[in-house]
Length: 189
Image 1 (cartoon, rainbow, N blue to C red):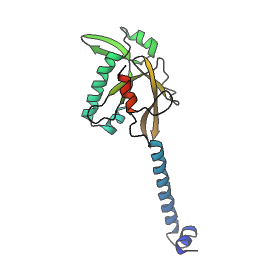
Image 2: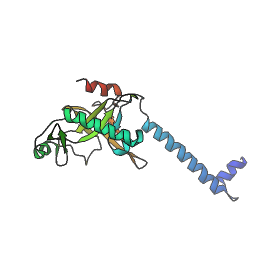
Image 3: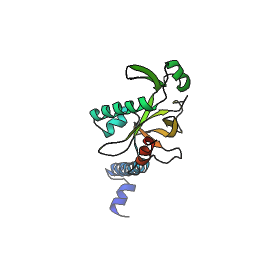
Image 4: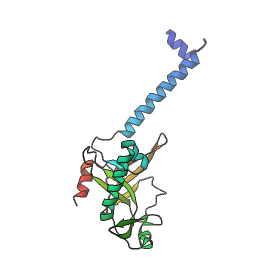
């Protein structure tokens, strides 16, 4: 038996148990890195999903996040269903599922934005504000939550936790990751 193998498996001399511990720690770290790579692997054209402030700040500066939010809300104001009364909106989208929107000296209510899908264009990204389906149960999102744009179901929003952080992803209705090309197509009608 080699000297190193003797020290790893027969720690009679000092430091053997430390070597085994270090070996196990390195092996666990490598396995965790491989698992994270497999879980997080996405095609390069996968749409960027912004469902939380942290999602936005992982990809952009705070100033850019504010600009993205403002642009998405302007799009949402012209594309989401409109209700003159909060109660009517909440009748369809549940209590807390609606938000007031001010546009041209008038206020109306619309389903709250659940996420923003964005292309990965560096110059001018295409943004699509998404809202949850009527009466969606956000308490049970184990299978994801269907999201809508202009009154049509367009995908499923998934929220997963990895190493303590919430990571959002978006799939089409068939379960495949939504691409930037699909996001662009949504805005064309």
